[in-house]
Image (cartoon, rainbow, N blue to C red):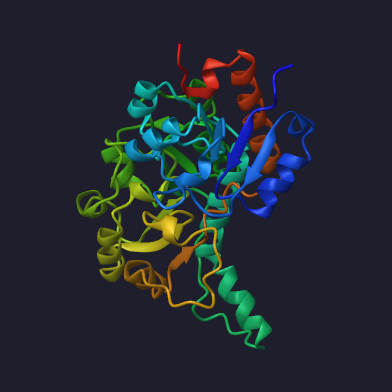
Length: 337
């Protein structure tokens, strides 16, 4: 009988561990969890494991992958859809399999993007605090009606398409950019256009594209200059899509009227940990926090019970499929011959 694969889970929170343990397939693996993230100082913990189970901010560059391979790891099982943190060329060269969870409750992230839009617009977070303090004054809480507003969605994969459907229900005019237009969205009245037109015309712009060499700092000084004054910018995708320094300058000049972020380019040193009793050393992040029209959440867009269940299920399926020789190409970024 084949022994169960030995799995090292990094960046493991209690909710991750619990969702895995609740799944029937959990009994078929031998899991060891580490709360710490994977990096140069922690890669040595992977000795004698078959599978590394990683998350969005774990480091999987060329050097780390070589060390993992030397230690006997055969499979990088990502608990996320994005794989920009993996040197896939190095993985292929080393014969390491890399799997992911292509789509886990896309509605979860889309709904969080909508929550950022609604909160920034109607300022419910500020109203909540005011009323708790006995302040019922409405000054400073003015919002706008979403109906008939032009919303630009950059990237119409599962999440972008879900947000387009949600905002269609609000009566918004939806403009999208994607190299591969979605025919179903077009039939629902969504308009595909150029990135330049989307930036120029839309009142709200939400990013839902992968991070790669072409999309890195897609939002920069030049693209910001082409946008409407007072534009609302939402990013629930990857922090590297935005040049944070350029965004800060645009906020100072009132070019950006509202900024909602669930991701941040340097988030690996901050997110998924409690820093409430510490002095945060990231001056750029702290500068963002000073703006009254900026709302930041800590990469929680995916964080629903349904999404955690799907992540656990698909990740376990990927681990066992490779172990049993039945791997599904659609879930593997790299699948050795």
